[in-house]
Length: 361
Ligand code: HEC
Ligand code: HEC
Image (cartoon, rainbow, N blue to C red; front, side, top):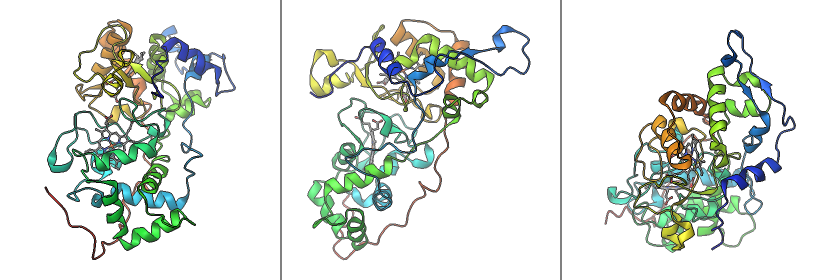
């Protein structure tokens, strides 16, 4: 397998620190305390530790799929189009609602014939910053990922890629849009190109937050309470796994110190390698305050509990409710702005005479 490397957390810290994204390293910053009555109000964040993170880029580029306005426009239409599902009642947006921070708020999503999937829908926002896609990392990138749900029998349930292409070709407006998005190609309406268009659209689903301003050097971008929480997050070592631009994204073990009970064995179920047991792709913590319920099984409803479970299972520590609350206060600062006009539902091209009818079977 290509991605079975289990990067040890400590190694990861060293690796990320090596790619220092910020000029002002190792310069401890004294928080702007208006009323410096007690030492506790002067939170000192060691900026060297912040090198574990990276500011969010405006888009997650991949030279294999250059982003163009035409691809994005097409990808946006496909993202919202229920005609890519068998019964024409499920779109990507059904489970990854862009107005709801890219999730549906349910433990498991309902797809074709209201069937339930076996894992929680992760957000599509900032997921271009993940090293791999899906909870078990089985897709290398967004383009590969996008081909999955359309053919998944419990999600969009299309019988075959050929059937998807046939459907798209029956919609005249799409044929024109594919020609524009993939100029010079003899037969631009392909399943690969469909995935590329969706991928290009998703690569710009980014939500910059106050934390990015803080990373860029603006010490006032976070409140005192948020800095207290950030310090606790860093002191615990959460950034050994939740790091980079997405504040997550690599493969790590769930239950590193204390086993986490789950029927789902993560990457092991895919590779059957013992080393992959309970290995999951670390989710982004951006917008995490808005993407409940938590974990691959959607088993945890509130963020404070999720934070306490992380401390327990990943570090073997019981942290107090107050400490967990404080970390949650910091996590709130990772809630970004939704790109309202970018995610507005577009007008979809009209069906043609040969466009298949919904199939509820
Ligand atoms: C029926 C609900 C459903 C539909 C429809 C659906 N997804 Fe998902 N999506 C999920 C679930 C559940 C997962 C996690 C599955 C897993 O990890 O095994 C997921 C994972 C993803 C991921 C990976 C994110 C990450 O952080 O790993 C992306 C990106 C994504 N979906 C995009 C899409 C796109 C694009 C479409 C439309 C082509 C789509 N999804 C349709 C439920 C859905
Ligand atoms: C050893 C790596 C590692 C460490 C250290 C770690 N996490 Fe995690 N974190 C993960 C993984 C893996 C998951 C996904 C678990 C799953 O499969 O459900 C996760 C999930 C989460 C979630 C749920 C997110 C969601 O969308 O479902 C939160 C919140 C979280 N971690 C916060 C923290 C905090 C706070 C700390 C520090 C106390 C921390 N993590 C330390 C690896 C880690």
